[in-house]
Image (cartoon, rainbow, N blue to C red; front, side, top):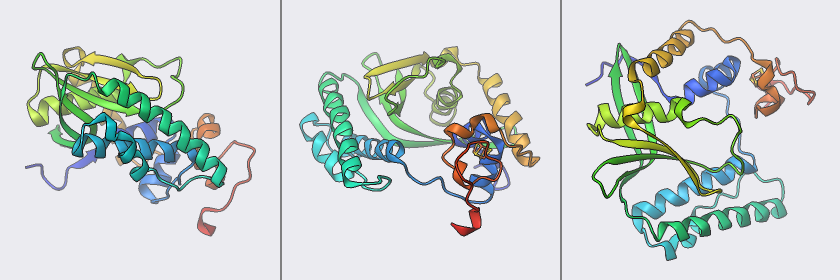
Length: 249
Ligand code: SF4
């Protein structure tokens, strides 16, 4: 049982702080929401679809039924834009269904949550897909719906996968396996074995940022503004789009 006064760290908090500490303040201290845009809306639709599909069916012929049920209409500026993204998602789902026909793993859970304690901090995470491989080892998978892979992407440096691997080991006792990021739109998977994760240095990194959160250090990082969904509502934004005062929204 983890004491209630332990402060919680998760990957989303850490990633937000690394992107821009002031964005962390807006989201996690002031409770502002970024709102959905087409790309994030489609991402939610696909995550929901795959969760429902693997939880209830695992029959690739039924995957489109789940997509139609889970497709989210919010976040689009017109019916035409909504249809454009619906069709993009449909292509992704059809491709996923093709590959899932050959899957040999046993799915053990979707959106599966872990929680563990380390040095007075509570670590929590939710894994998109957790499965057992034919060789008896375990596999944690995080889905990404990006249409392109960032050229600087390096799976061995992923703090997200590192935390998920540690979570699978410490919370569920699964010591043998690998963690992967699966770019579903591109059908590309990047993996790292659990044993290559340096647990202490990963957790130290989380705690280092956790201490900054606790110390209320939230300087704006204006080099991130062009990619920031909050830029229209942030007084520190360096982006030329017009700032709208938060309280008016
Ligand atoms: S607009 Fe820029 S400064 Fe403001 S929260 Fe976003 S990234 Fe940070």
